[in-house]
Image (cartoon, rainbow, N blue to C red; front, side):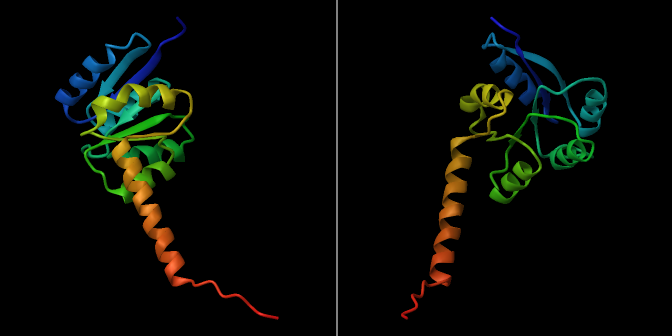
Amino acid sequence: MGNKIKVHIADDHKILIDGIVALLKTDKTLKIDGYSLTGEALLEWISKNNIEVLILDISMPVLDGIAILEFLNRNEIPHKTIVLSSYNDLHIVTKVLKLGALGYLTKSSASSHIINAIKAVAKGEQYLSSDIQKGLLHLYSEQKSKKTKMSPITIGIP
């Protein structure tokens, strides 16, 4: 078997990290590459390590996940990031995707998606949990429907 995918976890809840670690240890292609409990600790880790796959919480003290993504972009630090959050707010989802996150999982659906998400993101593919996919599709359909209703098609007759 080839090289293992190295995963770093950044979340301010150690119990959640422990659960993710236990889950990831069930897959022999994955390797835990440490964890950070704060955004500041994550920046310190980043200064000494390369990010292969980063699992990043949005809500962390001092520096949140969005500030971390902005830092990574501003400093042109390559990253393959999966945001893992309790928020299913589609505005947050679109913001982190625009900031370069390749994946977004809600914590309520993470256990059934996280291993597949890591493998997809490690290959440079996007991965969204099914609840986020459904929400984005619904939002897109609503916006498309509003555009159609607001701009009727007129046909000019010569």
